[in-house]
Image 1 (tube, rainbow, N blue to C red):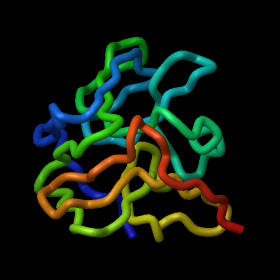
Image 2: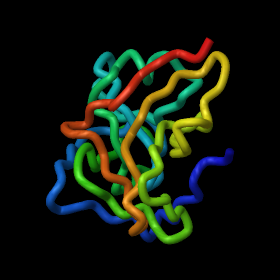
Image 3: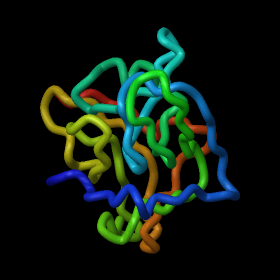
Image 4: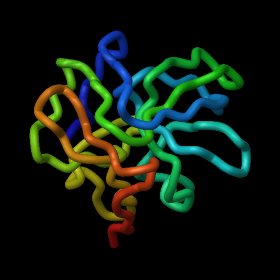
Length: 144
């Protein structure tokens, strides 16, 4: 299945949840799934095809600001329920994970053979995804 179609202009942080700020390691659009690369001290696009995303296993979330290029500041929602826009429309009760398209968010069933499952959170039905506490990836597994 395709990744959710996020409208960057509709992405809003959840002010009751935790956000982290830092430096982008690439151009990042609001609403994309990201992870913190501790070896480079930057936020990068998460990708279910990439082992590095899974190895980090923490400090993942959804970008709630944009970085037009690497080295720019970025804000990432790591807990709470950010709004990702009406176009995305995450379904209530559905589990969402890092997609095989870098930065994408899709259903947990999307990764297939050779991909890695990195669960982000659960859809709330109000254009939001409730993320795991403290930016922890809720589940990790490699598909055989």
